[in-house]
Image (cartoon, rainbow, N blue to C red):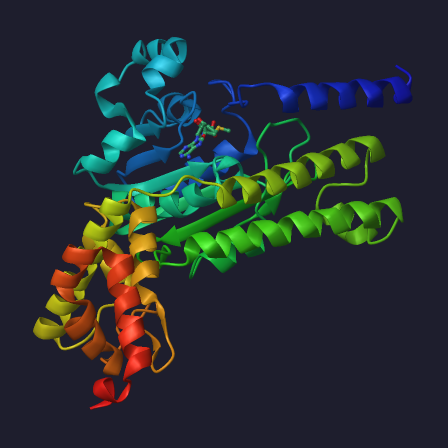
Amino acid sequence: MNPDVEASQRLFKFYRDCLREIPPVAPIDTIRDSQTARVLAEIFVDHRSPAIVDYGCGALRLLNALLTKCPEREWSYCGLDLEPPEIRFSGEHAQLAELPQRDRWTTDTLSSARQADRSFDVAVLMNVLHELPIADVATAFQDIRRLLKPGGVFLLIDTVLLHEGEPRFVPFYPWEVEELTYGAENRSYVSKSGIPISVFRIQQRNLPCYWGMTSAIHTLMAVKRDHWSRLSAEMSRKENPEQMRALGLGKHRELDYAYLNAIIANASYRVQEFAIRPQLDARRVDECAHAIVMTVQHTFHNEGHVPSAELVFDRLGEQFEYAVIEEALMALQGPVPAYGVLLPITDPRRSLTPSSAWDMLEDVIGVSSIQQRGVRAAVSNAVALDHGDRSEWET
Ligand SMILES: C[S@@+](CC[C@H](N)C(=O)[O-])C[C@H]1O[C@@H](n2cnc3c(N)ncnc32)[C@H](O)[C@@H]1O
């Protein structure tokens, strides 16, 4: 076929795929690809008989790979997604249920898994990160941290560039994943077709869980949008060929522009979507702020230090969603000129020693003040008092 015709057909297909309402999910039998091979290899590195949770399991192709390629190994599997996999992919579910070893696997929705008391050795997030809204990235990390046993491992696998359309695709570079997590073992590679694939092993204890993560991802997304826009301009000037090659670009000019434009549009959409997201339930945020203050007081009195944000997330994670905890921490923080921050929980990894801010937290904001006024009014009141007579707090 004439190469020009072929390129325009591919371009047409790309845009048509991008505009499809239903995001593509790999068919159940896509189990001989390099990504699946990597995941299967990684799953058994630290655990001989792993309990596996597949977060955003889609059409259950990882389960299919386990059943057909690793039947002799010991493993158990739980596939989670927004909607029940047995309803969304009833045909695939029925097909797998026919195979031997039906007792090794279950499926569930993410919301009910959050309430259940199950824990796993290995969590897999395969080809999910690139389509998550900003707030859901932090939620996914928080969910996975809580679903994993101590000593468990998180496997993150994602594509850095797609040569097919996908309505919500915004890739994360491997170095961005490294920024969002601590101690991630980078095992990324370049596929045979020249596409970089992110592969990370992250120990449960190194999984991030800190307030401000959502806004860090928001900033990252805006930077990413601008970066891909620059790439597009550079491509039109034929600059930076090494970077284009490293990103799997430079083969089909029209298609490359199409990929870049789709990514820029999707990243912009994420930034907008985040800015206009619905307000969280104010009562839940107040309840959570109250629980945080109780946790801080409890830790201070019993352990002699103020807890880290990570500990707050761990203690309250069963009761409150990530976004609610983050919002409550943010509301509690409130800028106080005299002390920098009101609530001395800032470092995700360390417990901080008490400071004078502690006095304010306990005496002015206090539990009853949050209950009576709501967290925002309690903090505003404390800040107003602080402006009025700082010396009162410095004694
Ligand atoms: C591209 S598919 C990947 C499916 C499967 N992991 C695989 O590799 O074949 C992305 C999956 O992420 C799920 N997903 C979308 N938004 C999500 C969210 N906010 N939280 C968790 N999963 C989500 C989708 O329902 C979909 O099944």
